[in-house]
Picture 1 (cartoon, rainbow, N blue to C red):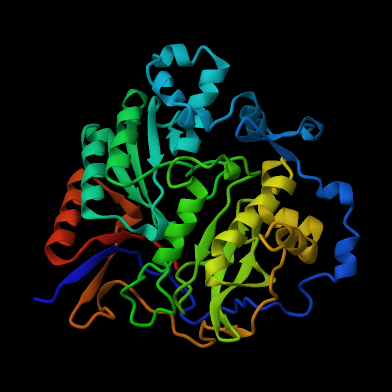
Picture 2: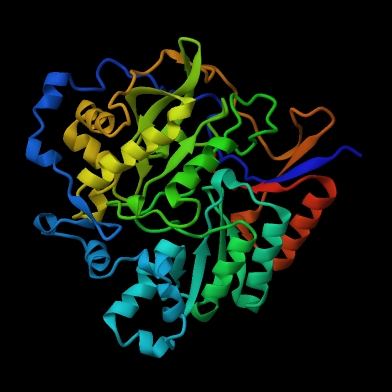
Length: 425
């Protein structure tokens, strides 16, 4: 019997366009303002609004007017101290009724714990938490999945898990006293939930068929792993990127199908060559929300593959330093790009590059201009001869402990692990 690897996948939305979208990584002539226009940005507007204090980035006093409630919570107590200074150990010992008596500890469970990936379900599961992990490219092993199954099993009917749209696991039913031990267990199996919620970089997304796709442009897994390691400092916590004005999404495209949805990411790496070198053109600013949906636009920049971390760091620092922190509906990175103009924003990124240089976009896109988007449900041949992969539909992404154990068993018996992905494509 031929071996196979199991992947969690979902069907395309009804009436979706199965052909390549008109998303380009090279800029049309009308996108970027001229250098002269960029120079018109007030120099005072380009003053960084945060500064480093005792290892954490804090909003300067002069920029604290008109803040949204979440920013005030961050100022009252640094959220990352719950992890980096073991604050979670003490918080987990406090009875819930005592936590509710103090605004500080109440904000801890309702807001700051999101920096550890913990979301209090106050309205629907009072006293219980959803825990969101960080799984670059959605890759998880059977052993990791069994551990997650063991966590939710102890919560009976309250425990379950979700496979998410950003190639991730979320486990539900968690109670606060168990959190320190769960975090240790995650570390032991090579997982983390750190920096997966609130004003942090979300899970790096790649091709769901990475490494096995017969038509892949590039295996995205090594790149998404590197991005995640940068963002979380190898799961130790990285305060350089934990006080953003809002959440921030990143993807690295490896398929002609655009399974990675670059148009709705704050940063999308689009594969392209330049003068014989492999690298990526950059799209920036994509997001959707109840108030506004914005498609990512070209930054008119190309980086060699070796520089994906440098440019990610530079873009994050520009957003962290310059983004506004008032109305939460207007604090995503695209609002900053709109305010400064694309070229001025690009210059701010360039300033923060190691050599203070950023090459212009390449015209040598590797994504095929005409491509019929594939369906990944069912059994399909891998690039490895005599191997196949199986695309599974998981209704609304919801699974329980027994389901997870069975998926892990299938992966062990017929393959070497699986990717949890529930992509709406």
